[in-house]
Image (cartoon, rainbow, N blue to C red):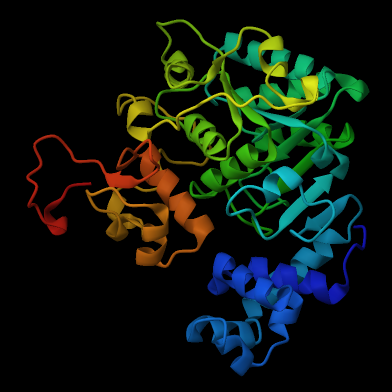
Length: 409
């Protein structure tokens, strides 16, 4: 790993990312007040109390636990291996596009060619249960767009993700490469059937990244966090095939919320996997038939970015029949079933509220709040309005006065 920061500075950033008890967003604000996490961790308790709540100040002033210390040691040992790097927001190779995204990770585990992060990028996402036509389209578009200088970002899942990575690699050394964002630790490849693809990405100067600590397994709650990075790295997102209730459409909404372009390839009106792209097109995403439809909207094509009006798609509008399978990666259908299993559920009512309000009510870390929120959306338990506010979904026939203890999942 290139030594762009002192050992103490790197240690402080890794500790900040690995210690979940600190609350990354809150601790980052405190770190900014002191000029960085290294300076923050060196402050006496009295100084910390002046800028942070008592519980947080006490946690920052305390020595890291044995578990956190072990995570820090593992991360730093991993980073000194050839081709590995730990990227924090002050690191010169931290991706500029992601740095602009709200709630960006405090640390990225990166393996491969860091030059990919300096290229203009497009995310290609879709169903893991894609049709042969869908995979062919994803691969063909990825290859041609990579030849035009766009680095292809996706999530290394089965189906559309894998086809997009392969297409970018098919462009050869003249192409812009590909970035795979994991929903696991950097030392695990999921699904294991894509291990050979991951090896090919590294062999052809691509990049594999994740924000999750080493050893993190493929839990359902991890994949919305991964999708947030996929959207944040790219100028735009192309949805190839997706069910009407799917992680791919949530990725598109995240991209729209970040001000990025959203593209969709239409399909047969008889295919369930066309419903997602068609819903996006109805909401203002650009219909794509050829690569020129994408290149004309992105800055790499003509030096300036054209912003099309795109109303963020309400989760309720993108929800299909409950029997349809979404584009989730981890084992199990949804991250939160029943909804009461989510620590965010008590903070959400039937009156729409903002995410800031949910943060205050729940006290959850921003990354965890986002993961829980997306899991509840995917499971159909909450809806997000066009103004971004969130509320519970009222089931048909449910009395308005029914208590929480009486509600069914």
